[in-house]
Length: 108
Image (cartoon, rainbow, N blue to C red; front, side, top):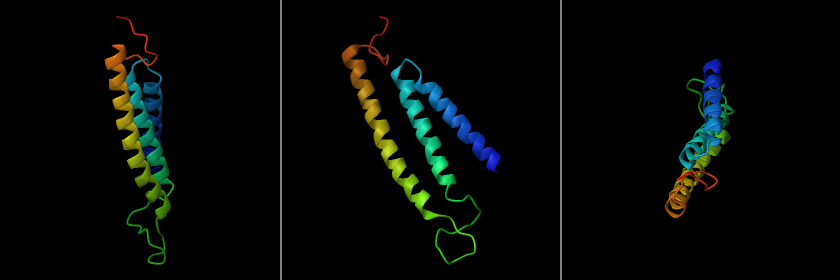
């Protein structure tokens, strides 16, 4: 289970970094989203992965830490807002510059 989880994190991180290094705006936005998903999964794993482990202290021998779960919920909302803002910014740049390159200098 841990190996599969680590491989999923590695794939998400590498794809996110690869897409963030592209010259177009839409792949950069998708890369940011993938990288934020990888960070969310990493934070979620810090709360002890386990089957049927409650997040309440004192109710069982093994419990899941609720703090990473709260951090991930907050990060999901912030990531959604950041993605929406980046998409609007990319659409505005496309409309004004007539180019979707990150540096604004596209070949016409």
